[in-house]
Amino acid sequence: MRTLDRAALWLMHATVVSSIVMQIGKGDFLPPKVSMSQYGVGPFGWTFTITLILLAAGSMTMAIADLRRFPPPPRAVTILIAIWAVGVVLTGLVPADPDQSIPTLAGRAHTLFASLALIVLPIAAVIRVTMARRQPPKPLRITICVLAFASELSLGLLVLAATGIDITGLGPHSAWALYESSSVVLDVVLIYLMCMVARISVVVPARAEVVARTSMP
Image (cartoon, rainbow, N blue to C red; front, top):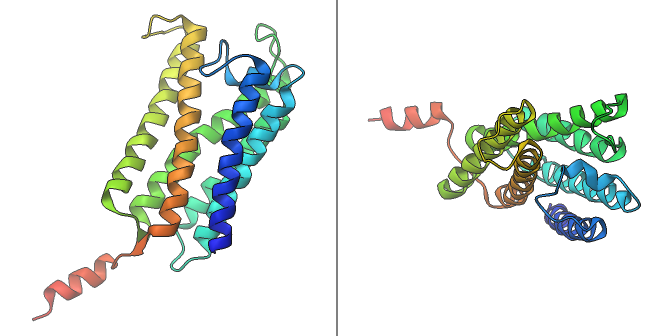
């Protein structure tokens, strides 16, 4: 399991390095001018695909390492992380629309895969640190829950920006890019923290066990 833990961390490190190369190649740094999907458009679009494949690989390696420990996390966590990983890979493989004013089927599929992935990961993180028998320290649990809420809030604000409601004053396109990149960065941080959770969690007594112990004479 230590090998899987190290592999997950190194894959996440590689994801960060690849994302930096991606931004340099595009000449557009976070938050992007239009959207993160546009990193996949143009001659350096392959860096976007590689970055997302590395992110998915790191996420699944972390999930497998956690699953092989006893007791394993709730099944919902593994399923949601698998959905996240598949969504991330498909986001990287299915191209976005170069011209967003002319939507295509591939562009719509790209948006669907990305949206699904961004929605499910924070949910998986919260379930992992609140419902699993193996729990990390309380400060780490609180941090993960706060970051997960912030990620989902960013998605909600992104939807508002897509409908033309901009509370930042940046304009709909800039607001979209800001909220989207915020959600993605928060999710990457969540994966890093979940790698830590898998390693340092300790088994806590089930509720029935706690009640039984406290009721003993």
